[in-house]
Length: 179
Image (tube, rainbow, N blue to C red):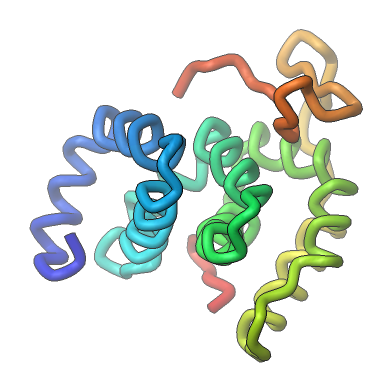
């Protein structure tokens, strides 16, 4: 998928809906660690490739995709967390975030900021630290859009759900990079 870029970009654009529903459900949310790890790495490679910019913009505009990425950030594996971070930062960096994305990030701001305050990788990496600092800054400065959490649109519990998820959404469907 990373060699024939124009063919892949065309395929993903034409088959976005079914492809990413299946990719997310069968790979990113798989019970198998190796499957999740390879899937998040591949997703990052796909979304960060310039030939897939339209696909990336669409991907980072989905609240369902954001939910999956936020949960991958909470994985026990530092490798999965790091690869999930590289995709999550695209949601934050998107200058044209949909209202749902903004409000989900704002609703989870304190949890995200606490997470990033202690999020470390084993080796020293200046680019990672710079990216993390930028993500933290953007999250801290983000302002809610529209009717925030009126209850009709979204319900965000103040504490994690019984399953430990950061929040729960109903199951329905960049101009700037930080790297």
